[in-house]
Length: 118
Ligand code: SF4
Ligand code: SF4
Image (tube, rainbow, N blue to C red; front, top):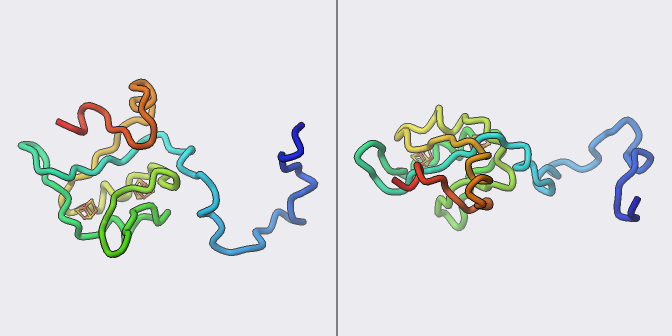
């Protein structure tokens, strides 16, 4: 065992979480089985994102990124792939893709499957 590993003896008594809001420190995106992909450009079959931020309001993980007032899309380090954003998006411009599809293409967090770019 390396010296950097946390052992059960190192956990706080009762497993309490001593500091609030610390979920941001963890890479919870690794739990995701499906990845939301936002359609930024209008296509014959799908509307484009209108930047209404409804998804930002409803995402339970605060994984919809707004930086300096601009909507930047999904924070894949923290999105758990619940699909709530797909359900609430009034433009229906978010599609969930199996995470395995990105891995099969050798793409990391930034990639999109071929269907998403049509
Ligand atoms: S899939 Fe869930 S966690 Fe991920 S961005 Fe959408 S609402 Fe947030
Ligand atoms: S809810 Fe849909 S249209 Fe609105 S900002 Fe999110 S992705 Fe874009």
